[in-house]
Length: 217
Image 1 (cartoon, helix red, strand yellow):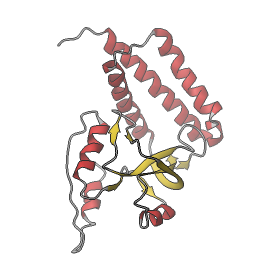
Image 2 (tube, rainbow, N blue to C red):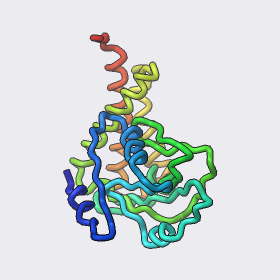
Image 3 (cartoon, rainbow, N blue to C red):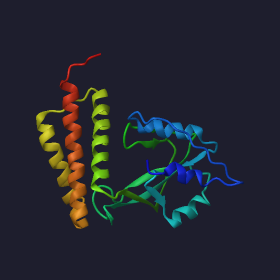
Image 4 (cartoon, rainbow, N blue to C red):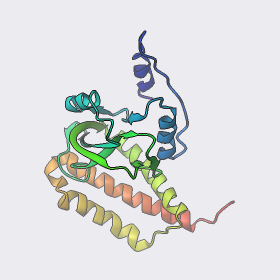
């Protein structure tokens, strides 16, 4: 929907072949990622979302990677509503994004991650993440991710009590905004913290609804 496919197709040259594979998400990000990994012809895979791009130092690493390493993780800098977030839950996190596909697999319906028994080379190279330029985009993703999280917990036979629906989102906001210092990111910081708290509320509320609704199957 954001012309990513057209942009990728333009990368094709006489010496470089570009293939595009299409597949429905079906509320399972791990299966979607694994589908792409299985299509890769080389052993090392570096994956990004359309709203991410590597910093210049990371590009240099990618051009000179040590193939004796199995996994590489990188820091991610989020840009939310036009402002870089240097606090809160998104800051100072490392994400495993470069790996040898023969030694691991993706896990998790949402916020999927590469799981491997091989060691991880943790670096401080930056992946820039322009996560949401509008509140509409942000709230759409909050709703989608809470759907998937509620279904994932429901499949694990988890339930949500009234107390959890009330207290969990509040604790989430306090942790993100005060403990992780999201308060220092100004107005975008409080909007982000409230949004993530709301996502927690929706996930718990949807889980309660799934658990309390009689199955039609």
